[in-house]
Length: 119
Image (cartoon, rainbow, N blue to C red; front, top):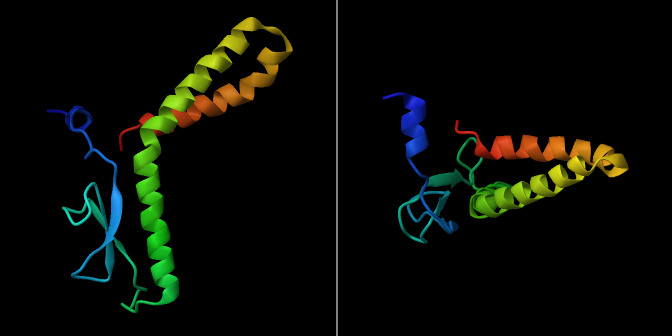
């Protein structure tokens, strides 16, 4: 089976995702259920294994970013698709609004394409 087809058929772990400290390491676990199986671990130490206030803050910020991106992806994609429909209506209406809305339509379509791409 083609790797792209096989990958497209597999769905990601449903959310909402959350963050919790990994009891066995200096890492934060990220996944759908606190204390359950982690989808990924975020390291909160520096390159030599030292856990500092700065590395903890960066680790938590990174884990929070992952969780917010995963938990909001579907809603954001739906909002972009709604915006695309509105911008298409403006484009089809002609006139100054059609010309003024074109850059936004290009940006919205680019964002949709990035959100739908499978790596």
